[in-house]
Amino acid sequence: MQIYVINLDRHPARWQRIAGLLHGLTIKRIAAVDGKNLEGPEYRDHTLAFSYENLSRYERACILSHRFAWQEFLNSNDPYSCILEDDVFISSDFHRFIKSETWIPMDCNLVKIETTEQEVFISRKTINCLERKAALLRSLHFGTAAYIISRRGAEACLKETLQSDRPMDHIMFDETGLRKLHPVYQLLPVLCIQANQRADGMIFSELESSIQPKVNPQASPQIQMSPQITPAPKTLLNKIKREGLRPFRQLSQLIQIAGVHGLRRLKGVHRCRVPFA
Image (tube, rainbow, N blue to C red; front, side, top):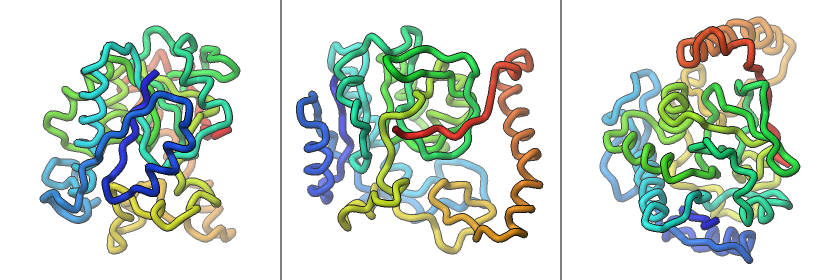
């Protein structure tokens, strides 16, 4: 399976690191679009609804970069490709999975092979994938740093991003994206995790920067729902508030799932934190 690695020209150290990790596999570098060279706001206004005008120039760059990867993939004859961003860490058996396509569910358009270690909803029914499992993804799971995509999935993603009105991970993995790109699978445990999700991930300074900068420091932390936000201190009061709100957050997500997949499927869904191993 061909791997397409999205990498900015101004990040040569990141390319050298990821190329070393992927040694022995078939990889191709995709020159990422640099958000610094695009028009658009520096930050998205999280108090406003999603729209193209409200996408930051870095979010626009991310979408364009993935589009280049999909187009390059579709120029080949391969049935699947693996798309990676250049700051991922990989599991010890990553090479084995990439060298084989027999484990990929035959009906799939997308397999998400990364985690941001947030809680998500997945199907209770799973499929064996070598020594791992795959479940249908039923709710938004942030991040587009590592996934396997079919030709049909790439064509659908290109169509969905002709006039983008929301960030890349929402286009692919929110409830609307999951419906349009169905079936979308979540690998369990995953093969990849981004550097900023690991305590020991920032092994050199260049990994601290990316296609998209840190979130707007002036934005409200209650509105910003990014997994990169620093959590509130773990005081007893915060814990009580968090646990008290948990049922309402879960109910909201279940209502969204019901709207997308129908009430009959709610019994087949459960909430979990996707691990990296």
